[in-house]
Every structure is written in C-alpha cells, then in structure tokens.
Amino acid sequence: MENETKNKKSVVVVKDLNVIYNKGKSNEVRSLEEIDLEIFPQEYVIIFGPSGCGKSTLLYSISGLQRPTSGMVMVDGEDISTYKKKKSAWFHRHKIGMIFQSFHLIGSLNILDNVCLPKTFDGGEVEDRRAKALELLGRFTIANQADKFPMELSGGQQQRVSIARSLINDPDIILADEPVGNLDSKSSHTVMEILKELNEIDKKTIILVTHDPSHLRYGDKIVHMVDGKIVKIEQKQKANTSVESYVMKDGKVREDLVKGEYIPLDLRHLMRSFSGLTANQISNLLVPFKAQQLFSHLFFSMTNDQIEKAIKKVEDFLYTRINFEDFFEGLDADIEKGGAGWDRRVAESFSTQVKQLVERASEISFAEKEKTARSLAEYFKSKWNLDLDEKRVSELAGIVLDRLENRIGRDEFQDLINFSKEKNGMSFNKRTAIKISRELELLLLLRYSG
Ligand code: ADP
Ligand code: MG
Image (cartoon, rainbow, N blue to C red; front, side, top):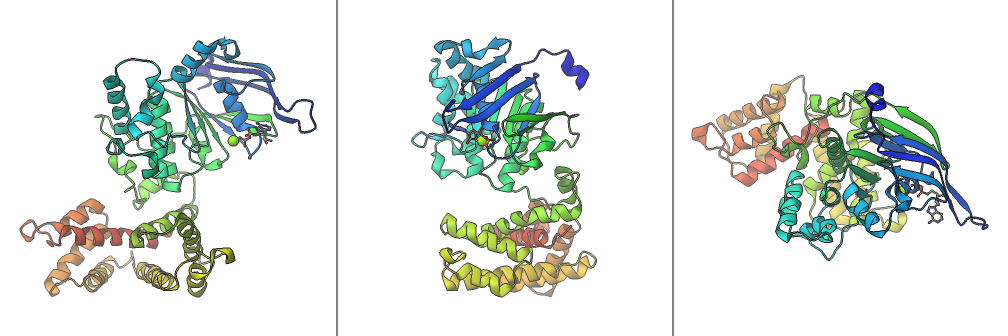
C-alpha cells in the first residue's frame, strides 16, 4: 500500500490551511489550524473526530465551498482558490460529487429530476441524462421510485438518490459529510457498503466525514481531528473484511443486500460484516435492529415521534433494562413524561404481542430442533386458524425444520409453504405464506443471542 501510493501523484494536497471565523472579533473561532494533508487517487479517507472539531470545515475547504483564511487546497495540482466562476462550476459538477447528512434533495422535483439536476446545466440531450440517471437509480435498486418525490421515500432510499445524483457526472472524488448520520442501522449499512463499492469497483477517491468509530474499518487513511487540528494520520492496509459486493460479476445487483430483506440471520454473513467483534457485541448491536423489525411486523400507522420513542422502549425491554409493566406503562405515558404517548389500548395490545413473540422466541431450542419445529408448526396453525390435520402439521414441521437447519433460506421456505400439494408444498395462499415466513424469521432473529 505504502509503495503503491508513493508512486502515485496526489489528487488532493492541503497545505498549512487555517480557517478562522469572525477573525479578530470577540467571537473568533479557529475552526482549522495548520492543516496539512495529502490524499492519493482511489484512497478511502476518513476524517474522524468529535462534533465541532472542524471535520465539515475541512471537507468544505477541500470542495472549495469554504474559503481558507490562509493556506491552500490543491486538487490535481491546481490551487482551487484561483478558479474563476466557470471553472469553479465545472469543478463542482464534474470533479467532485457531494453527499450530505440531510440529503439535500429538492422536494418539488421528482427523484429522476433530482438525479439529473447537476447535468441539466450542461446542456446535452434530456433523454441521455434521463437514461443515465435511471441507470444509476437501477444500480441502487430504486429505479421504481423515479417518478416519486423525495418525501415519499425512506431516509435510506433518499440517501441512495443523493448518491446517484453525486455520480451523474462521473466525478473522481466523492465527498461525504456524515452521510449515514440520519439513517437507521440497516440503511446505514447499505449506504456504507455502496460507498465502499464506489471506492473498490468504481475506483473513486472517497473522503468521508464521520464521528462514528464503527465506520473506521472502511477507510485506508484515517485522519484524526481534535479542536481544529489533525492529531494523527493512520495509514491502514485495506481491510480484508471484504463484504459482499452489491454488484456481482455478471453485473447483476445483489437484491438481497439492498432490498432490506438482508436479515443477518445467517451467522456467517453476520460475522463477516461485523468482523472483529465478539458474538456478544454483535448480539447487542442487533437489539436496535430487532426492535425495528418488531415494529415493521406489528405496525401500521403512528407519528414518527410516537414510533421513535416507542422503539427506545422496545430496545429497553429487549435489553431487559425494564420489565414488562414498565414497558407497557412507558408506551402509554405522555411524551412530556418520557413516555411514547400511545393510546392505552394500543399500548396494551402491542406490548402483549411483543411479550408473546419474545416468549415464543425464547422457546426455540437449537439443541432440540425437531421438537421446536413441531411446536412452531402447532403455533402457526393456531395463530392463523389453519385448517390442518395431523399429517399436514407434520409436513409443515418438516419444512420449518429445514429452515431451522438452514437447508433452505427464507424465500425457499415461503415458496415451499405456498406451493401446491403436487409440488410438495403446503398450498397456503400467498399472504399466509408471507406472514408465516416473516414471523418465523422474526422469531429466529429474536432468539439469536450470540
Ligand atoms: P464538525 O463538522 O467536526 O462538527 P465544524 O467544521 O462544523 O465541525 O465546526 C468547527 C468549528 O467551527 C465549530 O466550533 C463550529 O462552531 C465553528 N463554525 C463552523 N461554521 C461556522 C460559522 N459559519 N461561523 C462561526 N463558527 C463556525
Ligand atoms: Mg460536521
């Protein structure tokens, strides 16, 4: 790595950069002091440090959006402060792509037009840029959202749109300021993997700002900042925790990793993506994910605030920080009093369902898989009033056992119980098949404890 970079010409050079706000006034802030930094083509650089230490200021200085008080930023050997208006515009549209924590999508434009935006100023055929935008959206598996508006998309989807937008002019350098700061853990993972792929497969130079230490494993070079200064620069070997690529060799996108059905049930998967952590740590990391899955399983509509507060309560319950009574009371209590502000009856039915699922999951025994499969089959039968005789319950138990022993995946399980009897299936209708397979996966997830 060292030797490799030595022979390369640097793409970004920051020399003795100082940024001082309100210079000479009583409210003067020395945001950056004597910053020296060299970045090479195709490096993945992480600017890391606590809030307020100057990370964003450094990133915006490299992008030319922030003027230095003194010192210099050179990109491809050119001092970017010398750029005239036209060159500066070209630089921002073609040389660098930016991704922000709050996405910065334009609410009145649909997704496709948002992605096209940086290209619309350049002239050229409308059809060409639309085709290019659609291709990028397709790559991140959101082409079907092209006609929607940003508000209609989840945070994770919006960030994928903004990544597509940053790529529309095929820039060499991607600058990302806390790009997953507003996302849940699953969407964060997806976005971090996309950035990794842009670096490894598309050979983009990535400069990422983060305060989250769990992102450090993605970087080749870690720039540690404190109080406006660089205190350490770590040059790492590329992590060999090669996580599955989103695009496979045949050019197809790994739908399973992107679509949100990437439930880390499969331990091998899990260990790989959290390599270096103990099983116990992984299990703790999974709690927010478990809480979230419980919600999508049991939920229909509520305000964000009510949901976010309640998710915290579910996490507390799953971590066993609170008992069932406190869990239920916490959902019911007013938001001002630290509760989730739910209707009492909804709180009661929800907390009871969570409790039942958690208890049901705790009865799963991997030591006694056959017995477990049998009791799960009985449970599904009674929960959904399935009209099954003894023989059919045994058949269902057999399929559940295949899933428990990992001989079949989630999708195969769903297919098998949906297939007709002639095809050795249970011939449950599609909806029932989906419900049962979801519940089974959720139970297995809840049961997983490292
Ligand atoms: P980080 O991204 O690491 O959280 P920033 O680069 O945003 O840090 O900010 C570094 C310091 O500069 C902070 O103390 C912040 O308050 C200050 N700062 C940032 N922008 C301005 C501004 N426009 N005017 C005055 N102070 C600012
Ligand atoms: Mg910042």
